[in-house]
Length: 468
Ligand code: FCB
Image (cartoon, rainbow, N blue to C red):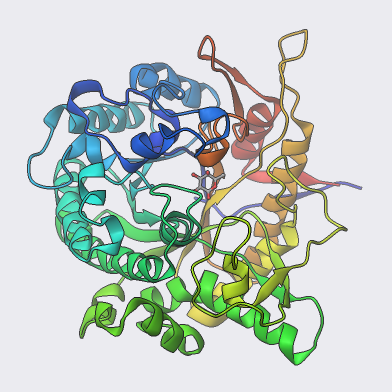
């Protein structure tokens, strides 16, 4: 027997993208290079050496993309602003032509009644700032606040929801410790500093947005969060799970919402990065009053304790040396009972309910948004010209129902942004992963809404999801 799960009135359904992943126009109208322009052009960094020079060419197709959203009945669009489009050198001079693109985008959305969710930083740091150390350099936090002021002054009256950073864990640890993403550095100490400076930048920028953007705008941050469980109840495995949780989740949640770092990793991180990166007053700055918390949820994690073979703090190496997991003292234990997406991520909707309930239990009643959730699958255009992504429909149905279950248990979840509007440039995986509810033919830039786009249109119209 099927039943219908209704969402609260005003629940904000949304789809998301990010500048480097969709815009293309890598050097149009005065844009400066970002770390992703640099990184993606180094052979071997990205699958098939794909880069975002053209991507979905949204920069030149923004009118028709916004029209498409309107046709699909999408009420909100989460996009990010490319910092080097606005400030080609990362500081100082403002490139008005770059800002005009976002003014135009926001006006197009407004004209169609689509709510704008703006992310200030989704990983495309101006290369000029990387040349001075990037996020490992404390100065970048202050430059970020300056950039936030420019964008808030230009768009503050027209954008309802702002997020400072998207997934600072990924920027810091994938970028500076694991080195799989730009800027491709492998130095744990630098990663710890980068994480701190990202958080400092968040605190500074959140205050700037609140001050400049006007009383109707709200500001928050989007964190990648995963519930972590131990594979057994042994003390070692439980401790390993807590360590990963402290590193991945609480290292960001605690300073942003409580004004401190998790005690169990603090000494280790101070040792790695040198204690002087953490200065008096930083944690007060980071704990800015924010209006909402965004959770990006893709999968849960299950881990066991690793035998302590690596020297803690050793730089994680590519294949032979100690790995990042060695440093954390964990081993991933895949859940063989769960199906996986094309990216290899386990499909675990129950993990979303668990995450949302934990957030409320540990951090109180701060309004929550799911700022990202979605899945890559091997989508293709069939001979009739359709893209029948039934796996994605079932993925989203399961996760929407999981969000509903959290709401039913009292969680103040205000909205849900599906990743992504379009198939796009999936970072180090290039164009090999299709996450869109709309298929992109990269040869022609044709957009073909998949079954999931039409299914979502019905969910949005009913503000409800039907389950079996
Ligand atoms: C998230 C990123 C987003 C996209 C999805 C699949 O970590 O924020 O840009 O790549 O993963």
